[in-house]
Image (tube, rainbow, N blue to C red):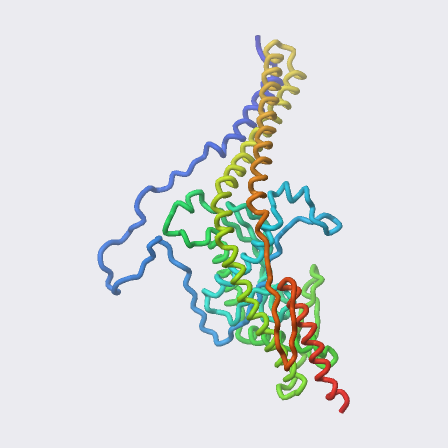
Amino acid sequence: MSYNKSTKSIANALLLMLGSVFLLAGCQSTGSKQSRVTSVGPTLNGPQSSSLKGSSEKQYNYTSNIFLDVAIPVFDPGIPLDDNGHIDDEEVVEQDIWPQVRRLEANRFAIETKKALAKTKAFGAINVTPDASSSSDLYIIGRINHSDTETVAVGVRVIDASNKIWGEQTFEHRVGEGFYRDALRKEDNPYGPIFDNVAAYVYSLLMKRSEQEKQQVQQIADVRYAAMYSPEVFGPYLKEKSQGFFSNSQVYTLTGLPSAQDPMYQRIAMIKAKDEQFVDNLQTSYEAFYADTHDAYRTYQRETLPIAVDIRRQKTERAKAQALAAIGIIGGVLLSKNSNSTAGNVGAVVAAAVGAYNLNEAIQSNKAIHAQRDVLEEKGQNLDIKVTPQVVEFNEQTIELTGTAKEQYSQFRHKLLQIYQIEATPDHQL
């Protein structure tokens, strides 16, 4: 009994496909097992400081006298939406997302970015804000692309007050299975490296700007805020132009600067100072929220990390099983069509049986994944955000604010505009 040439070709093709499936699985790294110590004995430069954990933070050296203020709006939680702008429930399940957890992370990730950026000592006020409508020199716009307590991926876009995009990049980090075994890292953030990388990236973009560019950004920020209150007076100081052929956004440039002695400009400067104070006070609320959710979130991370790792591995096994199933089924069909021999018929039956077995195995893995998704959702369902109502005083007026941080900020700004319009009326009558 012998195979014909067509059957041999198909058999060889199947072997190649099977080999490719297992090729990556068979590759293992063989890194050095030697100590990291390369130099011994006292140094000639005096005693050196060291970290007990064997790691060191990145060092920054900012020598400019211009410090840009930074706004970090609460991250986009990355919850998938359908064509009508509603939450896509099917995608939420498919991507292992629990909306309450993502919304919590959207706040926490913005706060973590603020903390990491503060380490550079290269910026002025760094504030977490409800959205991107607040006044600032520089904005860090973040979006959570993936988060499952093992792997986190965020997209970051850096935009200055002129609406010019400085840069955008995606960052990803995977938490090691042994992270929580190390007592020395008990207080460390398992996602810390990703925020440190974001801060280093923003710093690198800042270092590419000249002193003149940074100063102009600050000036544009001030004029844009003034134009928000009096567009007819301060709008002419700004000129809009397209950011590029493939972009619909506009970039602002200055046509001039209002006089610092302008009474209206000075009045708006006072309102801006109160606005900034409100945003500064919001930081206390964000920090309180961060502290209040810290223990619950850390427990959630620690307990679900093994589950997230297992899900990833099962998905890998499922993909492998599905690949083998497809190869087996296709091979069975091709062999039955291209061989009249007994060996060809036997090969077809065996290949089809292998395919059916692996496809069933893939389905079983899928069921296990769905079961573990339920555990993740259960642990995240009680995590939510609470914002305390507050009372703010300005120019002997009491402003009561309720709702979320975003709602309170919107209410506050609307009230400031009303106060400005009332106070500005005498100037218009003269």
